[in-house]
Length: 601
Image (cartoon, one colour):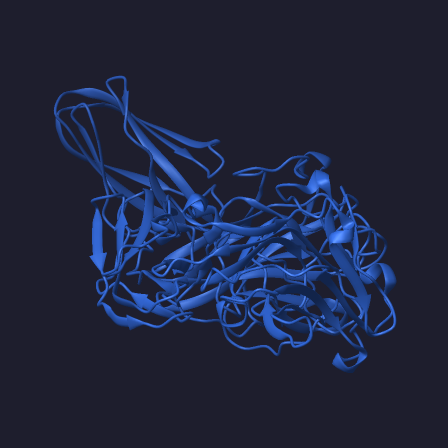
């Protein structure tokens, strides 16, 4: 059974007591520059006017459909009421949800033997349409089940079209609703008596967890004419991270999956990409011929390396020799990679609507792997909670090396406050940052796991880490440690857990303001004593001020009146603990930009 309260939804990760799914053994994470694929909601880009709608149904008339169960229990329903089983998921947010939709609520019945069909009651005439597609909207979450579309051109013989084949147990479909398009030309093209069937398939033969899944909802079904020439971008990839710290930039391969959804082969298919319109441009080698119904993955020939702090918007476009009937599904509006001052993130800072969770009262650790490009120091970790977390729950953050046994850094325990738990979500939801008690040295070309640790091991207290959308990660980048079983597992979701690092530590930096030039302190990092060199164009009184990472002033050193020219300041960190600090110089009423220094003891 899925262990969960009625308030929570989870991405469970093992066939243990705390969640459904198959156990995934511990393996090392993937290295940086791994291909990451992001699915595209293609239907939203299509020019619907280019397609003739042959038939459509919005489930407002229930008698248009025939419901049957061939495994003894559970029927589809048509109404405006969403799932109501013990592990209900969010109702479908379809275009005509107010008119009703089709629902198979698997865990409401939990017969452990479910094969249920819902089929059009009367045939659909596609005799004048040689190429056709089936379109529908769905909301679905998988658990030990499969979903199929069946098409018949005589009401007796059926051809199966699998749906949601890329989803693992506890995965949601991509979006609510997700717009689905299936090319059914081979079965329905030019046929006068076409029938459509949706099947939820979870017979007991699939295993002990079968026949008690989540739900599948369907709405706004149509069969539409398929033009001869139509390619679409079915997926894109542009790196693993939505946020990259300055100083950790690395070359990124840009590419996409291109599918021929038209009724004829397409020739000389080419992918192009731009970043910030003109900052980067690139094209792929052409695909000489893309057959009907085939998808090919194609990469831009040159790589892109992000630069200074800022947003980098990646846009893709595909074209072919033929004139495309739906050019709107050949392009993306833009995916953003952001270079930040010091933050690594795999999520895209937008809450997905569910969380990663291990069960009330059970201690656990949950985190993401991050690949380091240049030497730096880990300062802190940031995370976002989901509703269902309990105020008073005790947490900390930790950092592991690839052994998953050596803790390189950890924070002090922290008691969750009611104000830490967001009540609403949007871009950049409320987050918590806990500093490590000592910065941890990170070396280039190594991976590190930043985790949130839930320390309670009894009672009902718990935390739920929110999951972010869009950036779909490679496998084995999110890990969960189940304390009761002392076992690491991998998750398919992307929890909103980020790693904050020092940037360009030890690199000579310069700050200038109105005739005052300040150099990077040397050595840096340092244990007790460091020197700050500076130069002034005129005489002035000089004051050095040092701040911690929260902005609190921790030291101030008046240097007196100095003549124009070069000078140095000796700064002692006797009263400072290990960590990252910032310093400024004030001269003649002007304050220089803050520069970083790291104290290691």
